[in-house]
Amino acid sequence: MLGSRRLFGTNGIRGVVNKELTSEMTIKIGAATGTFFQRGTLIVGFDARTSSPMLAKAVIAGLNATGCNVLFAGMAPTPALQYAVKNHKTDGAVIITASHNPPEYNGIKVVWNDGIELSREQEIEIENIFFDEKVCYAEWNKIGSTRDLPGTIDDYKEAIKRHVDVAGIVNKNYHIVVDTANSVGSLAAPHLLRELGCKVTTINANIDGTFPGRTPEPRPENLKDLALTVKAVDADLGVAYDGDADRSIFVDEQGETHWGDKTFALVEKYFLKDNSGEKIVTPVSSSTLVKDIADAYDGEIVWTKVGSVTVSQTMKKLNVKLGGEENGGIFYGPHQSVRDGTMATALILDIMAKTGEKLSRLLGELPKYFIEKGKVECQNELKEKALKKLTEQLSGLNPSTIDGVKIWFEDKSAILMRPSGTEPVYRLYAEAKTEEKAMQLVREYGSRLKRLIYSLKS
Image (tube, rainbow, N blue to C red):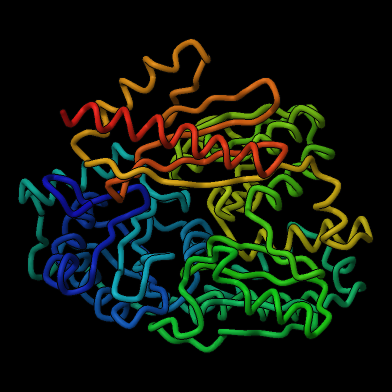
């Protein structure tokens, strides 16, 4: 990202504001993007970060300069803006957001006319325009226009309602605690939930781009206040969103926080009950739990590389209706084939209402795995060599090499080792039927990887 002839990372362009990502650079990115879209009409919106209005104006200037017309949606959740692209049949969108990154960061996501982020091939086209200075500026009398686009969030909420039994949820009068991380989730989720008949208690709900309540990454260790609040007010569940509200992590009524692949597996189970034989798209970092559910309910897993864009693009290519990630991303194709935290919340409520069961009971019925994570330092220039060597060493265990190296063992335990796309480390994801076995896998394969990397240095 922001390196030699590379702008886009695994999820858009990211950087520290006014250091790696400046307003001047953003104008140029806007102009390169506008050249790519050839004077099309694009939606522009942004998240709650303090720098987002500034960068939105800069990207609009670049788009207008190349003859693109802009529909300005203002501050909104990323999935609401992605839905607006399809709803208004525009050529695409540019979204200013750095999702879960700390407040000093911001980023740029570029979306195609189907609401899905650009493919890597399309990103390379924009990068080539940017680095080769092939921007096509419009004549003075053909500069693009900008006008406001009202109603984006209302349209989005109504679209979500079309995919659940509204009356069934309303009749249950659920009490939900919502933690929006002081960001754009506040603009949609609490309002939709009230429209679904829920009593809503909010925490970290005021918009504040410094994220004073918690970091915008909804990891269990960051959600202790949410878990405590669920218990304190005797709520039916809690939900936390990331910085741009495309991911959601759930807390059950007993105050237990659950990783994303558990709630995804729950959605998958009830989806496959109604859609037997369908494919399910998920990255290799997801739990074997997701495969267990597919096997039990006549589904077929399509494993992908880690990254939400890869999941979306694979769903589009194979015409798949459901995808999910362990970090809380659920992609519900009948609505849109992108991560959508508010849609995921409505789906969980729909399942609870139809079954009449509490969330803890529904999740407790799923196969149980213990997950442990670790990381091993590895210089970026050694990552490929380490991967090649690791694959050779483990060839007898029939590893998957879709993204890094993953081994499934006969006792249903598994270990994934993959190079990070953003840090000089290898990430380890282990799972097993016991916590001890999961921890043992992280220790054993972490040590093995350390020795391998050390040997490459000498």
